[in-house]
Amino acid sequence: MIGLPNIKSKVKESNIITINFEEEYTQPHVKEKLKFKQYPREVMNILRLGGLIKYLKGRAKGRHVWR
Image (cartoon, rainbow, N blue to C red; front, side, top):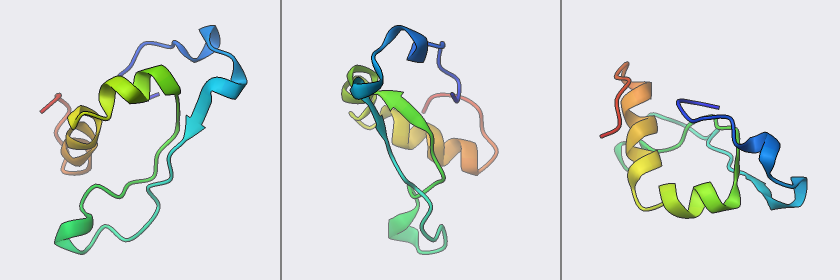
C-alpha cells in the first residue's frame, strides 16, 4: 500500500480490485501508467477523483506528497 493506512484487512477479498499500471511510462499522455497494487473498491471510488493518479505521478517523479 502506497501511503495509505492498511484498510485492506478490513475488507472482503471480493471487494478488492486490482489496477494494472504496467504499461509504458514514456509517452506524455500515458504518464499515469504505473505498476500498482490492490486497493479496496470504496477507497478507489474516493481516490479515483484525480487524487490517486496525481499522487502516483508525483511518486514516479520522486515526490512524496498528495498533489
